[in-house]
Amino acid sequence: MVDGIFFHRRLGRLAFILVAMLAGESVHAQVQATLSMSKKEYIAHEPVVATVTLTNNAGRDLLIHADERTTLNWLDFEIKNSRGTSLSPLAAMNFGPVRIPAGRSIAKSVDLTGAFRVTEPGRFRCKAVVRLPEGGGNFVTNTTYFSVTLGRQVYSQRVGDPGRGDVREYRLSIHKTPQKSSLYVHLVDIRTGRTMQAFRLGDVITSKAPKATVDRVNNLHVLFLAAPNIYAHGTVTPAGKHLGTKYYNPAAGRKPALATFQNGDVVISGGISYDPKAEQQNRARLRKLSERPRMTFR
Image (cartoon, rainbow, N blue to C red; front, side, top):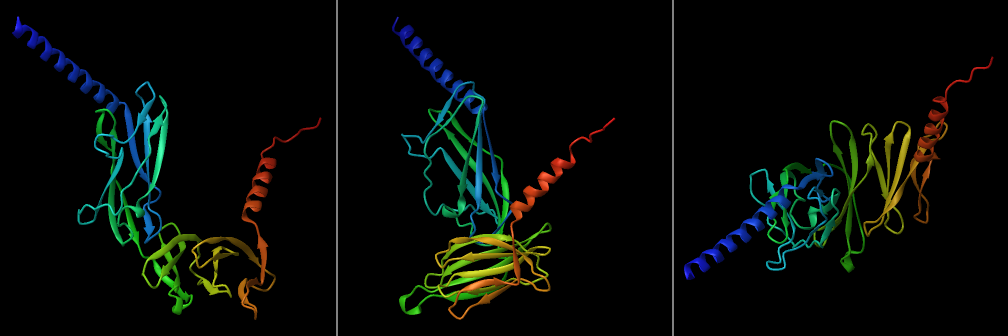
């Protein structure tokens, strides 16, 4: 009699474990995860953005969150360099819970530069690990590849007061791909050697070298050929803030140039203001008019 009771208890426990495992496998099989990068090549120190997309095919809403028992995040990344060495996290990544409605997808984008040393030149491969709560299991996404390069530096200028220890350096570099060339700005803290900001100013035609100078408040002004007969003027502050980019067409018999007044202000001379968005909207409007059916009068 006692043996029978123990047998039934064991059978009940095994059945419970089996049901839990099957439920976990069911959820695991019905949640699809993919990993993508914002692009394949990055300039050193610019944001390396990875996006994990989760699709819920479980037939019910899912809440994914950190495991309270182990404090493990529901999302982690595994990154290896070209030698196959895994990169250790520089800082912990904390992700809040996410709810995925049945039949829907959600995307989570993460800047990996804050958590891994992916600011140095090289090739890397990355995959994400997703942990489902309540024994739902772990699974790994596809592997994606990306590279980091320095680009070709074409300009540098230090600004600030050495006596106060706030000297910073603007650096311009050009990154070429088979499709196009891009102009980048880096802002470096000279005292610490840390890159404070790195971002893309825009497409550049390299047949004409970019021109740059600083104004009386140490803002960086960059003038470059963005497209045939279209010049771009970008401005960056010593804090690394991009104040925007304006565009110009050449004036009659002249070409846009950076001009510095005696008070230190920097302006564009020899250029006519040009709005590429307005031009694009005008072309779209003309295209719609041309697509209208011809009217026939009898």
